[in-house]
Length: 301
Ligand code: 13P
Ligand code: SF4
Image (tube, rainbow, N blue to C red; front, top):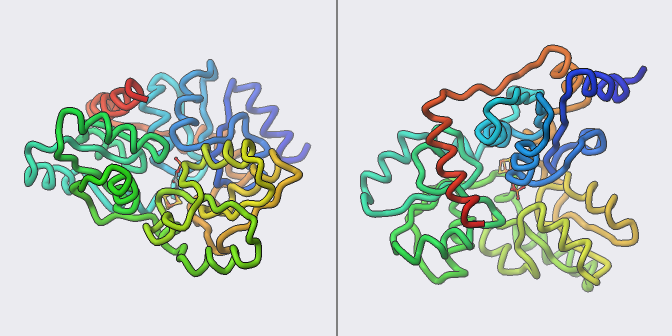
C-alpha cells in the first residue's frame, strides 16, 4: 500500500477529515477532502461530523478550527508550520495599543494567535475585512486594525478612512514588487492581474482584482478571460489549473513561496493520523474570548 492509500484507510478507520489551504503542496491538496481559504476551511471543519480534523495549513488556521470545533481533535501535521505575520503581534502588544486608544474598536486579521483574537472586538479575513470595517464605522470612527499594515492600508484606501495600525506584514507577499507584475504583463498583455490584499499598495494598485485566495479561485473560474497573472503564493496555481484546464496562470514571481505552507507532506499527514499529533490545545478562557471575536465576524458576513 502506498502512503496515500494508507492515509485514506486510516482516515476512514478514525473518522477523520483532511482539509488543506490553497497554498499547500499539490499532493496534499489532492488528498484533502476540502481545499480552501483560512476561514472557509475552519467553517467547513466545524460542519463535518468527523471526530478528527487534520489541518494542513499553518498554526493560526488550525487554532481557528479548534476554536470553532472545541469538541473535535484538531491536528497540525507539522507543529512548526507557523505564520510569521501572526507572530509579529502578541496579546501584550495589542493590550498596550488598546490602552493608548481606549475608545477604539479593535479588529484583528484571522492571521493572529488565539491569545490575540481573545483581546479583539472583531476578527476579520481577507475576504470580509472591508465589510467588517464598514460595519464598525457606523458606530465608531476609531478602529485599531492589526497586524497586517498592507491589508489595513488596502481597506483604508477603499474607505478613505485612516486606521490605527500595527507594523505587521506577510514576508511572502511583501516580496512581490510592481516591477514583477509589469514584467509578466508585458509578456502576457491580455492576462488579468489578480493579487492578494496582503500585497503592498503599489502592487494592489496595478491589479484588476484584489481578492482572498478563495475568491481568486472563483474569479479565475467565472471570468471570461483565458489568462491570469497571479500575485500570491504560487501553491494556489495547482488548484486554479485543476479547475480551469483551458486557462493559463502565470505567477508574478516563481519565488512567491511561503516556506511554512510547504512544511506538510504526505508522510507527516500519515504520522499525524497514526499518532494523533500534533494536537491543538488552547486554554479554555482564551478560547472562549477568541470565539467571541470570530462569532461577531460571522454574524456580519
Ligand atoms: P486567505 O484567507 O485568503 O486564504 O489568506 C491566508 C493567508 O495566509 C494569505 O497569506
Ligand atoms: Fe502567513 Fe504569509 Fe504564509 Fe500566509 S503566506 S501563512 S500570511 S507567512
